[in-house]
Image 1 (cartoon, rainbow, N blue to C red):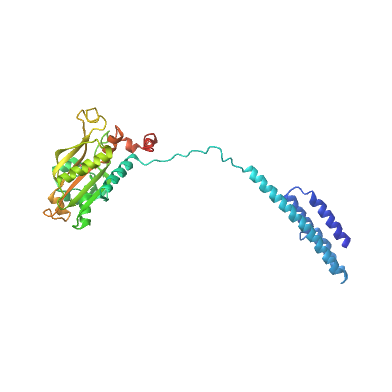
Image 2 (tube, protein in one colour):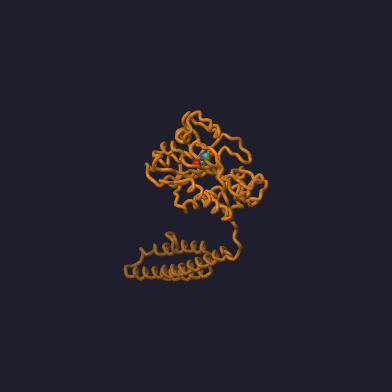
Length: 344
Ligand code: DAH
């Protein structure tokens, strides 16, 4: 039996020397060491051995198993190493090859303008407030001194949801909301950017939805000159230090007195061109001293405090700043248009 075991060992070790791959190695392992393998087969005969021979043969059996197992383990390790080397070779990446460029998005020009305007006013000590786009008739009109049937409501043809609820036509209602939230405290210094909606037919200068930025300042002794100085500072930071503004008398129900503000035409520098209709000036916003009734609606005593307010169209500011001729470009989401603002 001992000879059979020795023969098995040398046959197995011989075969193992020339084994070609991991699968063949496994076949050999099963063939020699498996439950129904050659070694088990031989050792099954141990029952017929004498008590003295049994431990000796048992030991030889163990040695043969150990010897075969050792070579299998060695071969196994060799195959694994070769496999790793093969994969490293096959999966090599040339890190010097140029990569695929992925398209990078850009901030929308309107958002850019809003952020720029916010930064300018934050620099002057303002905070940013927001209000709902679905607004009540009270906040959008009544509390701004535009009672029902007031003819100035016609200027802002509205999308009504019910008799009392509408899509806000202006950011001015945030004035009232801010005043109420401030609960009579001063100073109030806020700007309120947001979307507004009007029943307009879309064309190069009109859209049923556009953006405004509202400003509101309330405190003791706030004067028209504060308003003018603030707007001049804003315009110069926005368009350049050579810019001038002029205030033209106007009417808004929520301010008294009211004015419209023109700025030097950036296109021609004030000498007159097509853009400014040869006047040298471009209108950019409406403003005025907050009407006493509006202060009262907001919970302030007009004998104790005064304030100024202004409202501007973001699209208009952007058109002027970038020399764009059609407001519809802002909403078409054509990346050829939008990507131009990625680097500005
Ligand atoms: N809400 C006005 C509009 O949409 C703009 C405006 C004018 C706002 C004068 C103001 C203001 O705060 O004082 O036409």
